[in-house]
Amino acid sequence: MFRVDLNCDLGESFGRYKLGEQKEILKYVTSANIACGFHAGDPSVMRETVKLAIENGVKIGAHPGLPDLNGFGRREMNITPQEAYDLVVYQIGALNGFLATVGERMQHVKPHGALYNMASKDSELAKAIAQAVYDVSPKLVLFGLAGSKLTDAGEKIGLHTAHEVFADRTYQSDGSLTSRQQTDALITDKDHSVAQVVKMVTEGKVISQQHTEVLINADTVCIHGDGEHAVSFAKYIKETLESNSIVVSAVFD
Image (tube, rainbow, N blue to C red; front, side, top):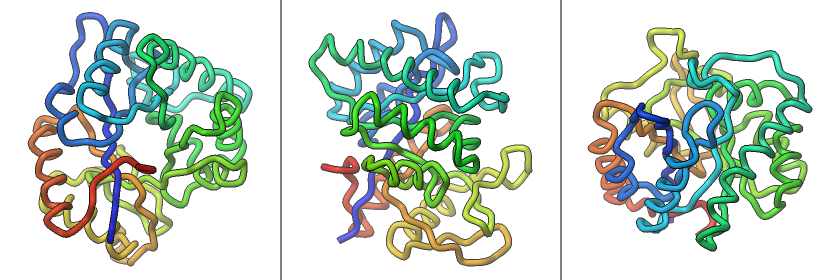
């Protein structure tokens, strides 16, 4: 039997800026990555998103990013491993505070945007992030790009690690994601997206932009919550996975 987690980046509104329809999308995902205030989110949004996730039975994770609200955390910054460690611990702590008020446990940590991509390729940043997660709690699950430096660092330090794949992104022959700066980075056709996910889950393979088959582990699938048709796509992918005899559940349920 095949099994996969569906995760979504949520809580990315802040102040008067509203992003995504998280009340609806939480009906279809099994894990929520909640922004912790650096790349997006604010204290009130964090509290409300925690509440909504609990009401929908969705597992909760911290989504720490670079301190770059204007760039939504998608612009690289030249930070040291120590700085990466500090900002990850800080942001996990912020979300843990809200979870403590309702007696809920954090399931996972998934770095956001540029921090995620940098740690996928930079072993020193990856080690620092994995160490930060481990030092907060070795029971936390580290989400990282499948087959990356980040998942490797998590496994080496002794964390439960979930290899993440993407429904709406294309891949290169080395298993990396196509840069968002390229025109072919995103998959906009829902049937193409879901077919890619089914292949990754059931066959452990993805077709790269160079038309090669790349081996890939798929423990959890990221679907983005800020797209124009995010809710309808979340519903469609969940239903299609289940119709292909794939159980959709949180990573260690």
